[in-house]
Length: 404
Image (cartoon, rainbow, N blue to C red; front, side, top):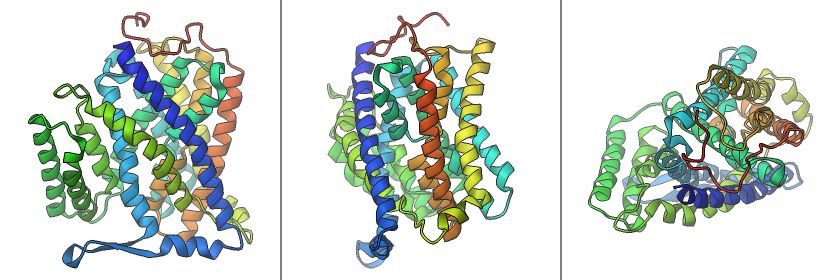
């Protein structure tokens, strides 16, 4: 079982860490473009209208909208696949092993949201309470990869588990709190499509391309229902069988082929479309004078350290869970700080929470600032923390883990 889990996990970590570098390059490119003499071209490019379909089925949105509601479906589908793996055969399959990262993730979601509300209060700005909840796996794991052997395998596994549970919670928040004008007939159509996919799985259909037409219909029905379309990707990912079907490991095949596309194409394009904030003319100073900016910084930087780190220490103190094998307790604060890198999903929720351009700009400045601070703080804390004595290059099996 250790070998089965370790190889895909190493591949996942490798793609995420390398993808994190591309993501940084895309974000920097967006900022340079949006603040260059060609800044008007940046806005015009992403605002140009693109249509698909014809007649009553014709759908028209601007290019940024298609990236956020269309292309990002693949990103969330890959997240759904990794969630399914962790729940079925990974670290989260063992209730005792999953207890610590699951509770830590809850703390890392609740505390940042509470800090945001405490700073901003209610009103339209208060709708952004979900922004500091997110953790960007690509950025966080990328930093751990750059640190190499200075961090234990246990720390990487802990951060990955926390980030995955964090994603599950963030997906729930998007579905429940950032859905408007729900259209039940379209939602019923999306559910029907998922039932068709489940039926195909029951019949033993193991060719991924056979599910593409059904997946497209589920996505379109979800888009029209008012529920955010990317949730269709998560649902389809969770329906993917984690164990071999007719001798074929469908989940492994899908992850192997789609994860690089997500890490090296989808997420960087998303960053290029959304990270371009015009900071000229005193806009940066204005943003730092607004409560939304500081609420996000407080939530992502302080909230994640207090939430993830505090809950982890409490759970260990109460004897409800233990750290992964090889992880030193002094690595807790470092990994908790890296949880404050909320770049991708935080930007995604910003687009759902706000319609006012000023609030969106303030939120993006807060996200970029907080993610930078969290990356530097996490790196510094991990460099001063000893790694565990049992750090290895593979994922420990249930038999290798110490008794909890």
